[in-house]
Image (tube, rainbow, N blue to C red; front, top):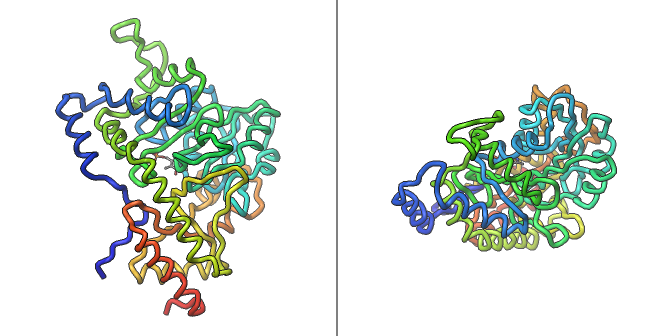
Length: 372
Ligand SMILES: *Cc1c(COP(=O)(O)O)cnc(C)c1O
């Protein structure tokens, strides 16, 4: 078969080559250069936030955000159980304690009622994750945060371009964190971004990620900093990708529309749903099959037909370092993990590829769920 279907492959081409060679020709390939500030400014402007600071990963973006907010030993941070491990690990790096909240069975996002149950005297922050690009119920999250005086650090790693109440995710809490890893909506090869409206706080983050190097003295460090900088080469790649963001988002929304239209008569599957006022960026279109066995058969069949899929993230409470974490568990995270599948979402696919995925899925279900 000549058709090649991509799950999450990055979409890079001539424009990226141009921008990269410009950066190389400039001689600035490391942590100094125009592309870094330009990329940060473009992101802040797009998201309608006061300031953005680039980092070398989404994970380091979350870590520096927690560090900046003074979160450390003895503090609790509420995170959803159903997320990528990189939401929880920075809480551990900071020496704080993750407390896990369950997710909503319809939207797969952190459930406000579980968050409220997880709050204690020690709680300092909530990290809502806009899973697969689908915005959380930020009105409720922000209400709870206000009631208990907690910070909100959005993990918007998967949701660049998603909207909630007409505003971009990542700019709805105290700080927002993005990832530009190779599989994300746009990529810098590897990288991340912290976004916020408190300029003083953001400038301190910029200082901390640069080894806390004081501007006053030639080389002087008055705090323990980090080397979390994005390089000029990576930022150049990011600038090229940024120009394509609108097109990528349009394509992902189109894919989601095709999946929903083509599969609407299959009452055995359910799509991830959105809250009122949310507009997902559809990093991935994901479905739930009726049970774990059916999900497994479906993945097997699609693989046989050259269609790559991925399971939903393993709930983080199922990993050894998180096994003993307090968890407000309603069974939803595990349920979604058992039954859920991410369908091909890369913008390198064409509409015909997505239609092929749909017809293969339909064939499978109309045959009665057997891959043999
Ligand atoms: C990708 C991702 C991250 C981490 O980003 P990296 O750039 O890979 O460090 C964090 N949280 C979520 C939900 C992610 O999907």
